[in-house]
Length: 150
Image (cartoon, rainbow, N blue to C red):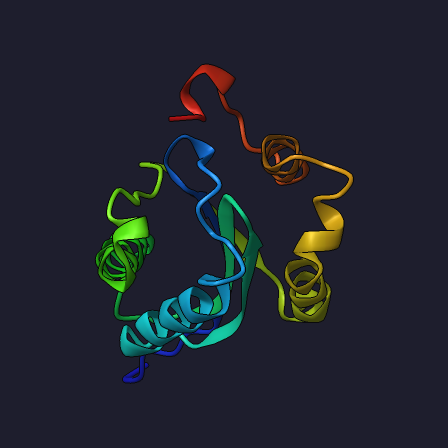
């Protein structure tokens, strides 16, 4: 087959370093827009971006031209530089080293999109740590909690 075709959807999650509560209402929508623009620039079409005070969720279509690792490295690096330049208030902003990335079927896109849109409501009931562990377990991913958090 002479063409290379791909349609892979991913749900990405990562937190601020040590889960610091740095994503406040004054920056969140601009941060989500910036993350979306970075994804778009890497040919990874953003579908939904959201999060809460200490983490973000990105639902996007993964480009066939970039690896998961390269996408995450670029998104985290570029957005960290951007947010530090917004104000001195964010001069010590960092993302955690790790991340979670989960495949999403086309039939589940709307469900995941709604989940991301409802992060503030969701986190009235559950912490980021609990949410992330639930997602790991739902996806059958083995983990050692000792290495999940930085």
